[in-house]
Amino acid sequence: QVQLVESGGGLVQPGGSLRLSCAASRAITSVFWGYDMGWYRQAPGKQRELVALLTSDGITTYADSVKGRFTISKNNSRKMAYLQMVSLKPEDTAVYFCYAHTSSGSYWGQGTQVTVSS
Image (cartoon, rainbow, N blue to C red; front, side):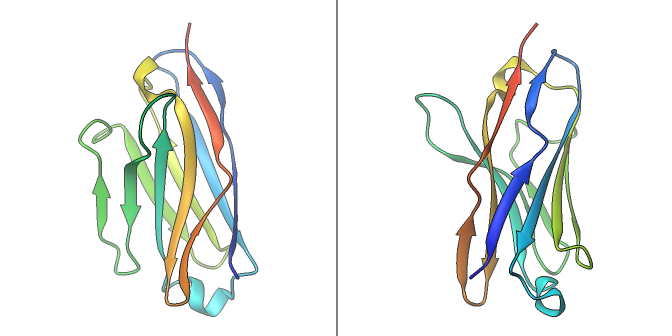
C-alpha cells in the first residue's frame, strides 16, 4: 500500500512562494513512474478541489485559479511529487493534499496547511 507524506506547508505573505513536497513511501521505484500524481486542497467550509494533476504520460491539468502560478512536477527516481506555488493569494489558504492514482488504487496524504496572510 502506498503511503503519501506531504511537507512544505506554512504561513506566507501574499505574493510569496512555497514548494510542497509529497513523498511516496512504500512505493516501488520501478512502478512509481506509472503513477498519476495530483494535489488537491480544501479550505474551511468548502469542498476539496483539484489544484493540479500530472499523469504518468506527462500531461498536466491545473485549476483555472492557479494557472500560471502553480507548477506540478514529479521525480520518479526519488518517488517524489512537488507543487511549486508562486504569487500566492489569501484565497490559496487551505489544507493541501497529495493524491496518487495507481494500478492498485488511489491514495491520499494527510494534508499540509498553507496559510497566505499578511
